[in-house]
Amino acid sequence: MSRRLCVIGVGLIGGSAARRARGLFGEIIGVDADSDNLEQAEALGVIDRGCDHPEQGAETADFVLIATPVGAIEPLFRGLQPVWRSDCVYTDVGSTKGNVIEAARRVFGKVPGNFIPGHPIAGAERSGVEAADSGLFEGKRVILTPLPDSAPEALARVEEFWTYLGAKVEQMEAGRHDEVLAATSHLPHVLAFTLARMLGRKDEQAEIFRYAAGGFRDFTRIASSDPRMWLDICRANREPLLQLLGEYETALREVAALIRSDDAGRLYACFSEARSAREKFLQLTENNHA
Amino acid sequence: MSRRLCVIGVGLIGGSAARRARGLFGEIIGVDADSDNLEQAEALGVIDRGCDHPEQGAETADFVLIATPVGAIEPLFRGLQPVWRSDCVYTDVGSTKGNVIEAARRVFGKVPGNFIPGHPIAGAERSGVEAADSGLFEGKRVILTPLPDSAPEALARVEEFWTYLGAKVEQMEAGRHDEVLAATSHLPHVLAFTLARMLGRKDEQAEIFRYAAGGFRDFTRIASSDPRMWLDICRANREPLLQLLGEYETALREVAALIRSDDAGRLYACFSEARSAREKFLQLTENNHA
Image 1: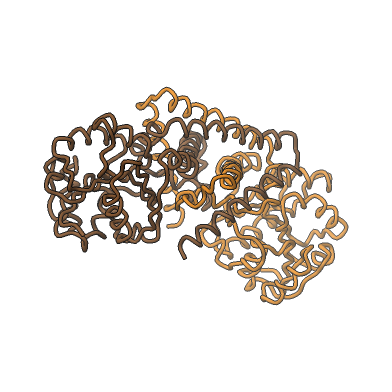
Image 2 (image 1 turned 30 degrees about the vertical axis):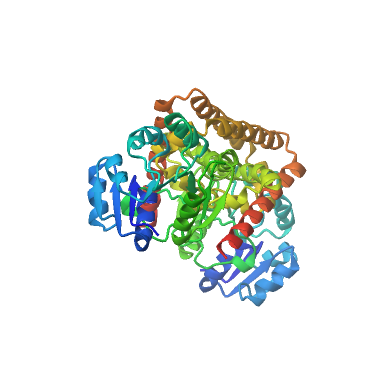
């Protein structure tokens, strides 16, 4: 397929992709602002060699995977602009797509046809190259949000890349991607962070965590996610997220009102509807994995 | 220890307790309003024989474990009152304790000294006797909320019972129990139900569940819990739960305001505090299991 892969940001996602992509490339170059992390990636064999500067790493690559935090993408585009090559394919893994597209427009005037915005839906609350796992994308969805001007051959190569990594590739309009992910990922993360923080304060007064069980552990797992990454995501996808936070607040007040008025019938209907919704989600997910 | 155990409500909790308690009793009688469930429990060997009426089942028992939904306890006490024996020990597994104590006071005038309110913190979103698991209580906490009038020998026997089942028994004042569990269990359940319901409606319009990942699966796991059981719990523990729902709403509005005003510094501090709180919870839980 290609000869040289450059992974910019060798964390969990970039590192996992590099591990699995080895068979596709003759050489894998890693770029990371954290030189210790880069050394570790090299020592682990995730990359062949490290490079401090994105433009150096990308200059000679045939395929550039941008796996930095979402907030770092615009300055990165500025750095890459002087060495941007028409015979190279560029893609990213950002959890939000509208802001990445806007950043590209600001830097390049228009989104380059050989940059295909992408998002592998494969998170984990772990981070860092030491958690890199070549099976991370197996059976997972990768959403690409190409634009009308996207080059078909660049799109085909990015699809080929993720398919090789075991993922199922889909295309979606960027705005819809951001709305869907705000609902299924960004909102739950904010809810979990908010609960963990609130109960952490209570725990300092009254040691409540000792009595929390497995349900609480699962519910708050995503609150162990990287705060820096989630800060970026919340800022990047602010409008859809705020919209959903408002809707959630309304839905929560509705349930609270049913509890307050002891409306057993409607409260039961709420909980039943919730359980049915989750069963439907589980069925869909099982089909996905099949 | 005792000769005959009567388990009233042979679901996940009652069935799991019966499975593990076999070595302590010569005979295990199961009582359940659902006769199919009772037949299944007998067929599975979870109980020795089934009985439709609580008073018949409890009449000749030495130890009665009440494992019905919380909302069924008051009528059950009324049924048991005529056959209540001073040489038998009674305990329950209700997720809320204040309402069980109030129900006992209403039925008996005062809480009988040989009834020890209890709560094994070992839930699962599964339910029914077919999910019964003799290891369910291994290493889990059981909170007993005895009263000043509780008989020390009854308390000792209930402690002995749960210890035999592998649990770690603690005592707590009932009001504190209800506040702690509202925070660590009841609030998260209501939050998860509310999210699953809200997103279920969105999914009907826009198929968002296909793009939800593992984080969402874990976050909403508790939304698969039995709606009937959670209706009872919300009604039984209404005041502490409403208090916390109000606090959560305030906390959520605070986070939404930080996102709206793009206050990166404070938002990062929020998420970091949340992550630290969860790490603390995980450490405590690991210590608990050690």
